[in-house]
Image (tube, rainbow, N blue to C red; front, side, top):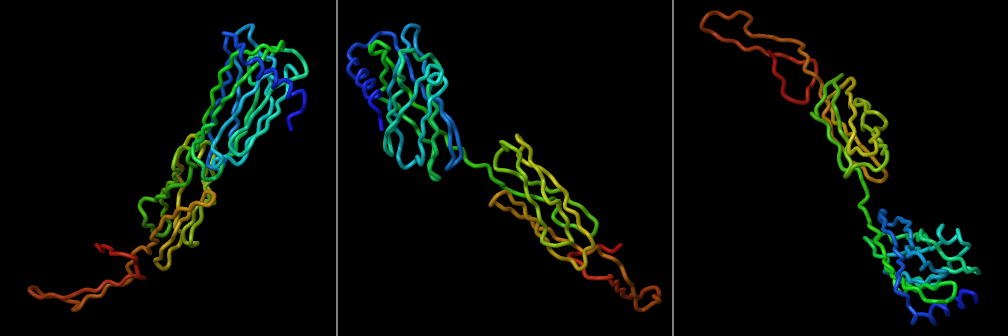
Length: 287
């Protein structure tokens, strides 16, 4: 509810609107950025020529109703310093505010209000408009004021984009360097959780991507591989996971070799068979 003193101030503002002075003040709403469904705090700043500082002001915010879930306005330091208050009233797409006080002290240049806006989860960048700006001196004289709105820019969230290990085949005791990467440079420290699908391949529990970086590296190490098998490394940040497959191969170990016949005379031939200690995952060259 707008109380009686506020209505009186509003009446003074409206009644004196025909007596505009040439010196012009400005009310400018800053811009900001947030993630989808996030909040942004915007400053509404007053700039008045010397001698044209207002004692009370009025303005109206406008915004697309489908994009906003919460809209609040509180008095800024330029108002509280001169014992002024803000009262606002509105609906889903507009918010009218009056800055007033039960004194004749002029409002000095600075931040007169802080506007906190929460966007809907599916909202994109959103314009917060300003209109119907009025201001008055302590004597009730109307002072010219122009208003400019701001924009809340919605940044795409930074997510985990990939994991890569090179090469993707390991034998017992071997290690491979792996890289996890984000979709963009981290704005703060990001902890990536790591896991392996088998005890035959070990990875650290996590790896940290520092602010300003886009990736980090870690080692994946094969233990005793028997038999040859496949492993999957999973990297997770929040609800996003990416994977990398790794082939764990048993090294070729020669067990026996047998040739028939065991004696070859000039001009004849024979055949030899080599036997490995166990199965291997791919072709091996025996020299």
